Image (cartoon, rainbow, N blue to C red; front, side):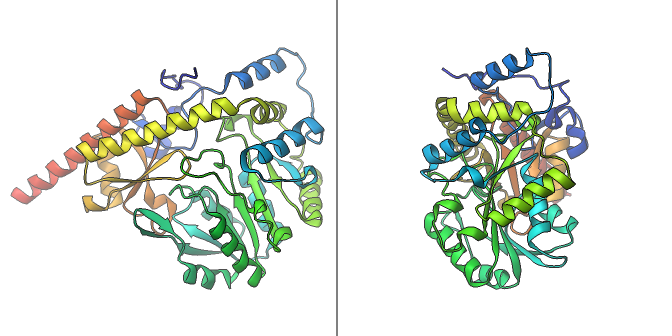
Length: 399
């Protein structure tokens, strides 16, 4: 039985979330629920394989162009998503965001438009702006407790775009795009001759429905699609560095591999990532099923806690990702003021939704990939912060 509830201290491991919390929240003594990694142990099968490799005293250059690595990825897409892919589509990269940056460079020109849905992962804004492309956003609309695409607005933005950038499941709101939505997005992309790049790094963390990868759609626009992913989120391995791109277009695939190998010189892989990818995709199905169950229970606990103690905050139920996207609009307070009370009164670090662009204002993104004990502590700290905020407002009113 996999144990996800025994707390693991990450202090003094050069951990971004814990050791460097002050960089994000201005204070070191907060309980952090911020960056997108898990306070959970790596699957035992992966740890065993990594330990065995590290027992060998030579850590020289390695390769990713071999059957063990390529077929493990093909196997995973077939087994998890019933999505046939070809080994020759796969290209190694040090990270999903590196791949995205290089594809923006290869597929668009300076000042070209790149369209995405907001609220969105904040690094998307950075990579678009730093590549000197035009950021085009279509804000997701919420109705019936779920987020939906504003199709008219989206097509208006797509008309001006060279690339449509998806996130599936969508970080931070947790939507998994349905086959119908994917097909409609691809129809619009084909109509306006846009490339579509999908960041599917959270693809395995789903609850109500499986991720539907772009490449499963078998759409006529097939060769203008790229999927980016990695084992780093699902199996908590971002420190190993490594990802892959699925690029069906042979010319683009060759350009990408040439750029990574002969210009940027990042094509020699991190061997521990290669090993971890093979083991994760061949041996860790049961661990993943247990993880999904744990995350679902944590999200249910968040919903129950809020309903009982903080009814003015509501959880937007996600299809996927391990975030609780919390609607704080009924607190009727600015994001800056709420962050002040979270950090100073609650001593808790939760990401402000304002980081994620239009539609993220007055929301919080709480990382639930942790032990129940940490989550419960964090929610009590959230409650303490809101109580302090309300008490301060009552005091101001009485004055």
